[in-house]
Length: 283
Image (cartoon, rainbow, N blue to C red; front, side, top):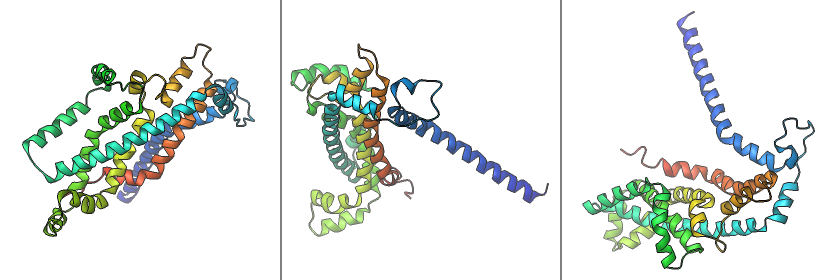
C-alpha cells in the first residue's frame, strides 16, 4: 500500500472510531429518556413484557390514571416550580454580586473565602443536612418554600460564583475605569457595564440551578412534609405505595416531570456552552 492509501485508511478508521464513540454517548444519554417516554405511552401490562405485540400503539391510559389517582403530583409540580424559580433567582443574583467582587478586588480574605466555598461544595449534601435540621426547626421554616429556596441556592452559589468570576474576568477593566472617570459608583458599574455583558454566564448558572432544584430529593424529603412537598417526593411515594407500584403511572409522572427541564436545557444549550467556556481562550 502507498503512503497516501495508508493515510486515507487511518483517517477513515479515525472517523469510524469517532462515529462509534458518538453513537455510544447518544445511546448512553438519550436511550434511557426514550425508554421512559415510550413506557409512559405503553399499556402497563406490556411495559415489561418480553413478547410485545408488533402493532404497538401509544395510549394515554397511564396519564389518565396519574391525574385520577395522584393529584398530589401536580400540586408537587407547582411547588417544584415555585421553589426552582425562587432558588434560581436568588442564586443568580448572589453569584453575580460575589463574582463581581472576586473579579474586581483582590485580598487574602477573598482568596481564603473562595477556597472555603469550593471546599464546602465538595462535601456531600447529607453532611450538612443533619446539623441544619434543628436550626431550621428552631426558626419554624420546616415545610416551607423558603427553606428549600435557601438550601438550593446556597448549594450552588459557590460554583455559580466561580463561573461568574471567570466570565466577568473577560470584561476589560478599562470599561470600569472609564465609568469611574464619569463618576459611576461600583453599583452603577455593575448595573450599567457588567450586567449587560455577562448575560450568558448568568444563564449558565441559572440552568445548573434549575436542573438541580427541579430534580432534588434529599432536602425536600428531610425538610418538607405536606405544604411544600415537591414532585420528586411525590414520585417516591408512588414507588413506595402499599397498594403496589403502578409502573405505567410512575413512567408517566417521570415523563411529565422530565420534559419541561429537558426542553429548557435544549433551548438554552448555546448559552450554557458559551457561559461555561468563558475564559478558555484567555491570554
